Image (cartoon, rainbow, N blue to C red; front, side, top):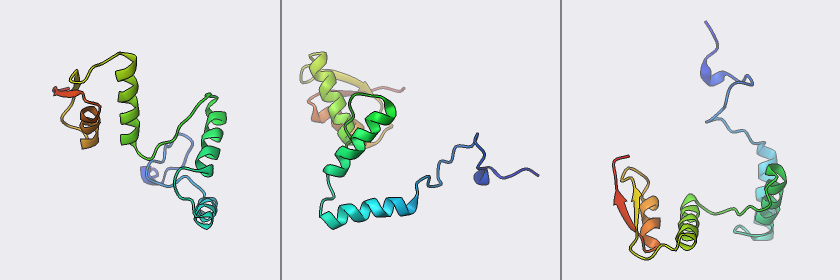
Length: 116
């Protein structure tokens, strides 16, 4: 019999549930943040954003605390660029995490549920 999928570490295997980070390196970074008393947006975030730009060859990156924050920003940009007005409708699905639709409401837009 062949090797089980969960133990497959070949190059073609994408490990989804197994950690891919180096524990000691992560603990050292966490320790640095805790020792300086800064656990929110700060110098480590800025450092990581710069490294991410270098890694991806992109000019900008902005790390957020959650996907909800990303939805809020994305909707705000869309509302501004396309000059959406309060009350304009956004077609969305009811089968999603609650923040998806709360973000629409928070921008003053109206979620319209559709079976997608």
